Length: 326
Ligand code: DP6
Image (cartoon, rainbow, N blue to C red; front, side, top):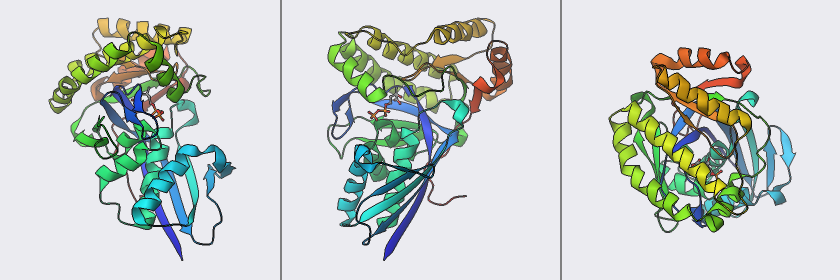
């Protein structure tokens, strides 16, 4: 009486960032966010439920992880089990396909794939809106990885009202990302902690929440019109504002490394030379450059004269969660 489920979920990059929670148990964010799902980076997860297991087991890239440390994983599993009235334990086998060189976060794809595999093991996986709620309990950004293309996470006010939704599918948007990998190591201040510290100490934080929620309808119409200039301007401003909230928190901190500033200046320089591109930066030093398909080669070539070839990783719009391997 084993029950198997599989899911593949891609990671995503926020264009309008999620930064701060109003409820950390349910992971309810202070503001809405909008993201682009990426094609290259994904997590494959298999979940096996069995009445014979006596505890949950979690293997990440074939290595057993201490499940007591995996509070968020247990939270997702418990939510799925209670929804389907199941009481056994699970074996989770997860593989991250994020090129080690990319230095990109994998909690979004990881938690979305976990929720997807667990749901498909115990029941039907057709309700993707509900799947995004379950993924959210693992990591906020994971709610958006259930869908492909451009995705809107409605902040909501309780478990039911906080979910993600696709705005534009992956084949209808010309938006690509060149990551400049500045540091591959795990970030020092994880996003969960960084956003909590910021939300509770930065005097700029209320302004951040208000400005982001105001920008949401503008971004929705920009992506619906495939207006690259508007998308880029809004995304760059969102990233700059988010990082301003870390510098204004107490004690202040920043995710930027010296090369982060260098890359920002280079993006501005390239844009002034007539190749349209914009930057975005998450809770780490790496800089992601947004550009249209026609400029990918030029953007890569430009940055290759300042950074090593293996520091540059290109990603295109990716698809939503899948329940089979191919
Ligand atoms: C800067 O989703 O990793 O990437 O909900 O605490 O797990 P938790 O945080 P997480 O935060 C992502 C922060 C961000 C912006 C974004 O992806 O919207």
